[in-house]
Image (cartoon, rainbow, N blue to C red; front, side):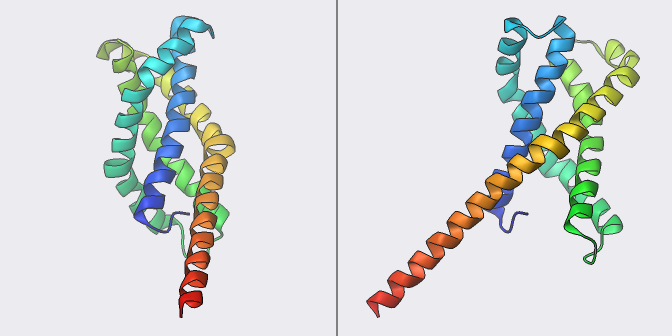
Length: 167
């Protein structure tokens, strides 16, 4: 997991980018009637705005609530996997609730349509987002983080070697 603010930001952006792109693609394909060039183009057009919204929500609101929930449900003696699973469950639950509404608004739906179809859209989004997070976004983001952390360790060792050689 991230050990400093820089790693936290990069990990968060990586997670958000994967989740926003694929959840956006799923919902746009459903909204436009299938997977085609138009749905891919629309996904790429919507991606930057949706990414910014999702990252801000996750970082400043949902992430804070998630931290409180994790402190209540996960103890230091629990496994890393239990932390990952609870973190995924809490984040996906809250983000899918909020982004189902925001995604509908960004897609041009009115509030009546969004709330009328909410109990169709949200469970679908939750299930898709949960498995996307557990099986794709989480492992990829943790891999990127490990590579970044290993690179930092290598640079630190090189720096120590250089300092020792100059002495």
